[in-house]
Image 1 (cartoon, protein in one colour):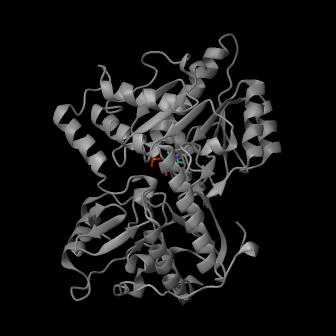
Image 2 (cartoon, rainbow, N blue to C red):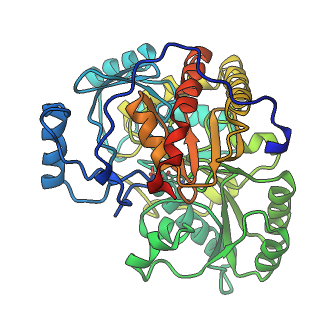
Length: 459
Ligand SMILES: Cc1ncc(COP(=O)(O)O)c(C=O)c1O
């Protein structure tokens, strides 16, 4: 959606919104030293007993003392949630447009999910993969029957799913080139994010995530997302085991692939026997209003990696593969102690049952369109807004400046949002069960907080 097609001017808020919490001191504005894959302001949090509640301050101080400093967290201590709402330890309410980074698809405390988890916890939680268990097989059957795939491998996170996909690609190529040197290289694209472990990290485009840990896995060629010509040429070299691509990039800034691009990757891979891997860790499982983001293109991969929302907040990853890929994998080639436990799989069945329902998916699509239209209407004329884009309930608001002051101001006004890209994209990935009324409320808070972008610290 381009700003030239925007509909109407900014309108000021008419809803009665809760008043903003006191602003944090201005020394909070140093850039993050380290963070997850989310840019938030470093909370150089200096608790003031008058304005800051003691419990939060204590927990934040203890985190700084006892936790390895990999995360530049927002200064917010969450203690409970219901639906699309979260509550901090002081009882303040927040509208959650983050879903724990696109995880809590059913929101917080969905009753069917809670029933599934609590019942299964009382029956059997963990067995390891030495034995069979029913929920794992049941979940695999559902994933297979709802997708292009023939078989599933379970793991515990998105990065693990990509790590397994890397190994499967290498093994597949070895298996199909038994008498000659197999291709071992990989292609990944600009703005991509595939994870933090050494293989997935090697496929992740942001150099500053990779360089402190070099040497990472060798043999990765990074190409421009959407560059058909370059991708076709490198694939044709015959040196590439697999191409990893997100049909819709989340961390990278909410960019959608074109059909032409994915089709050309499919054709080029087929010509030389290279595998096409779709990373749907963030964009899959209903987030776009389609069960799989790639469905909208009618282009299908050999391998698809999933994680985030699959078990509604419990750790899970999954690699979906076609039979030809599965045929290359033998006992002992890969494994995980925790993966596919009865507890996690039962939770995932509860999630999949809900989100794969066609009426649920069409509601996500419809709410996504409603949300984007509203954003265009209320923010489209704001001079900081460059583009509003996305599909379903993964929506990006690209700004001409860093989004961090806006994220911070929204948080202080009771709205949680994320950044993406180079920190200039506001990323909104609400629970898929969010209501239109809550989306209205979110837009009103955003409108009210836009002036935070004009603070001198942001220029
Ligand atoms: C597309 C994509 N792939 C992989 C990952 C890594 O997932 P995890 O953080 O569960 O390891 C992410 C996480 O944001 C992601 O967005």
